[in-house]
Amino acid sequence: MMNMKDISSDVNPAKVSEIKPVEVPKEIGENKNSYTDAPKEIGEISAKAQDIPQEIGENNNLQPNTVYEVDGEKHYTDDNGEVYRVDNDLVADNSYEINGYKYETDDQGRIVSAEGKLQVKDHDSYRKIKDTKSEIGKGDEKETDDRGHIIGDQFNGSNGMENIVAQDSALNQREYKDLENQLAKEVNSGKDVHMRVDLNYPGDSYRPGSFLVSYSINGEEFVKVFSNDPRGEVK
Image (cartoon, rainbow, N blue to C red; front, side, top):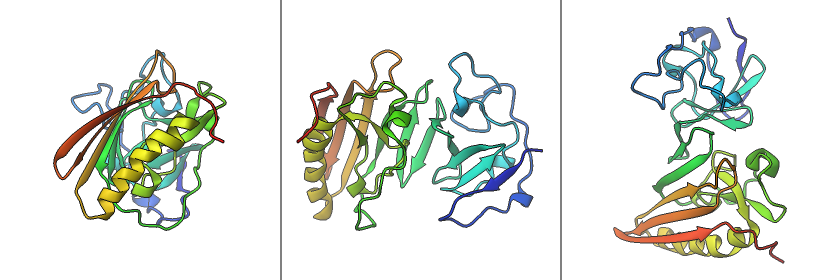
């Protein structure tokens, strides 16, 4: 039986003694996005996030937004109590929900989409980003990159690698920020604003090459494309 404990500091701990072991199915089945339905072996692409434990609890009986330690590895759960991250890797071929926003990853554990209704931030201060640029970019980040939010902090976007990518600083602090500020005015005026970001990657890189941003304001739809070409630091 694995050694499993809740190591979160800001949520109520799970009753680990009530968690019953469940055997991971050998076949992935119809629901490829279910954490417990993931195959024991995923292939050569595997990172730690794909080495899913066989015993994680019956029906993912875990507390939402919690960090568990399982055999020395940190497992992070989303709004629904589903594991979306193991140590410094996002679970591959997965969907998860953080702060009400929905995300999807590809077979390398890269974020390929994020979407949701933009909301007013529930805190006044800027929350420090948890992960380093190298942990997020996995060696593909540029010196002039920022750790850029996909869903902005001002919209209650989370501050971990589940919502952060290597983004050129000029893009992050200018064009992308300008759009966020524009949408924030609409949200604060009481309008219904939805946003979806599709991320495109060159080859096997963990650094996005471009962002396709689709958004609607009270049902009126707009699309913008941002290139993530390195342009240098913002002074």
